[in-house]
Image (cartoon, rainbow, N blue to C red):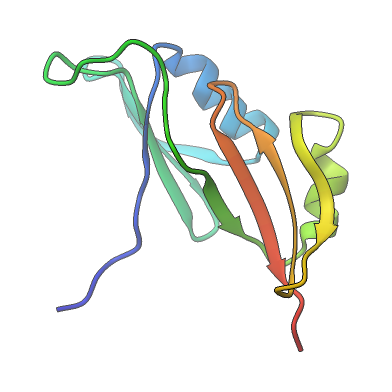
Length: 121
């Protein structure tokens, strides 16, 4: 049995604003969407996520997530240069002892997005 990549589903009452953030700030493209079902699938390279308004089956007061979305990239320096003035920063670009160079921002819903590049040779 082979697992496929995880595709996060972000719930939000601000569907269009969230699609705009991921597309306009991070460079994702909206591959599919449904106004009737109030969701969208977003893609950038090998990264995929979905955003949706919560449905009647799930209690929803506000966006919450007890972790972070960690996205590995191949040029964290270039991405940092692009985002550092266009997003709310959690922490600036830094090299960590475990061999990752990374930074973190918040999306428009307050979810933390970390971007990292393995710098170990």
